[in-house]
Image (cartoon, rainbow, N blue to C red; front, side, top):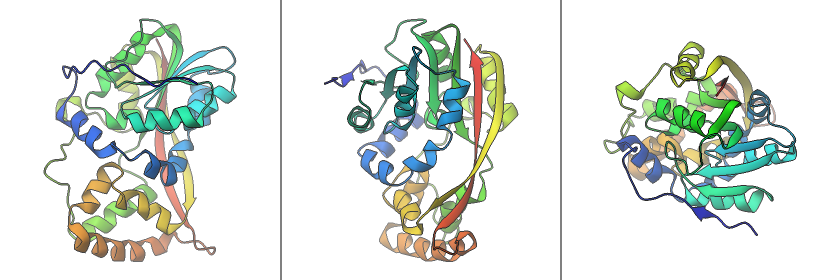
Length: 282
């Protein structure tokens, strides 16, 4: 059995209030994420691993591994996979789900690996959850060998209609971002566009940076889609719960009305989503 090793050293020099809030948001939510939004986030995994040229014999780091979807896909390709996440529950879930992976509790931008350790590093939506995205990418370049590939996904902004559905419901009943939940500092933010993400990779010193859009229609039960946010997953989960039980009930009524435009004949929701996929060489 592979042990889960906590390699964080307790220092906070590279963290921001945004990072601290993210730790609070995601603590203890691995199982809820696995039941709700993990399948959504799994969609770009094959393209992400293609961009990283992950295959037999390659040494791959899956950073921000969540419950192990990308790690499992990389193992299936014959790669030697290391997985890292800041949340112990996510790391434990990956260890259980993906035999053969080497998991660590570790957070960007302070990874416990030596320079030039990996042939490829991938981060599926992890840049959405770090306070200093440029510093995070620079760290991924550090631990990737010269010529190795780095590939990342983020959500595009403005979001596609499926992505913004619950936010629209919250806004309709007056729910707003709670005061304790900081946004990214302006000096650390960047345009969530193809051009903006490619420029961020350039600034991190990656060579040949390219970015494309990945669009798909996520089909799921209306209750499952609602449940993830209701259980506090992500920033939208914090917004949704900021009004207590009364606000939550009002938002659910608004959601039921708004979701009608996405409902299919079999009662599922067909939710359009768009992500950005970027890659470059160390």
